[in-house]
Length: 377
Image (cartoon, one colour):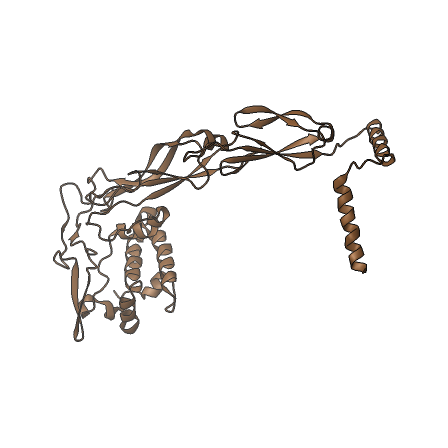
């Protein structure tokens, strides 16, 4: 049966670039992956077809030969090194899904020892947890060694055999006119070994996807963007290779009262107009409890008060930060007629005296007057 056009298989036009080829490949591979289509017997063949098309179109030399001569240009029986049998689902599994965790190397060279991919987990924390430190349980999806085949990828009682295409060399030679070109074997992808009888649980991958629960100790003082590395808790390696690492990245939630800037905390404290004018003492919150803040008389809105040592201990050591309280004078609302009368009496008192009770107001309007005078001159 004649093969379909490779561009048609991936659903792209002939003039697209490498990025579009890879994007289309990922979309089609995920659509027809056997693990996602367990009830569709035809998905496996379509999956192989997609993998074969990508093998040709992602290689500039093979793509050029295909564009010029069609399938004959990449047929190994015609002397041009074809795509081979791409039933190895681990190749596409790594290419398509590996990037989710910053994958390393996909499924290429499956029979060679490879380190597992590193992984990342975003951990949400309350500000109190970030400041004091905590221990969190996390549940992550990962690839672990298949217990059925002990990571070999072969059915129990069997093993990988020498690749019949390259004779175990991992490379093949092909004749193109007067030139002999050596390339990676399309059958074993350079490993020199192939698995004929695959493990039924991992389908020859040697690894299976599972969830695992880990305990993460978060040190005091962490901030958004800080990372904790858990060595060996990433994806399992291939063919006995070491496991990757897991990076737990902190994301501290916004707080209802405090804003954080490094090791310092900021908060806005509303005070009454009476406290601002006459002074007083009030309780303000800290992460350790309530403390007294003394408000001097004639305090203006926006005034900053620093409470030393009431901030955050830096995760890498050093002095504890401060809490900076910014007072905001609140204008009274819902006044009774009697209360409004008292304010009117106070206003009249200010107007009859020569004392300057509003120096900022006077300075502002003096500047306004000079501004308009300069415009008229």
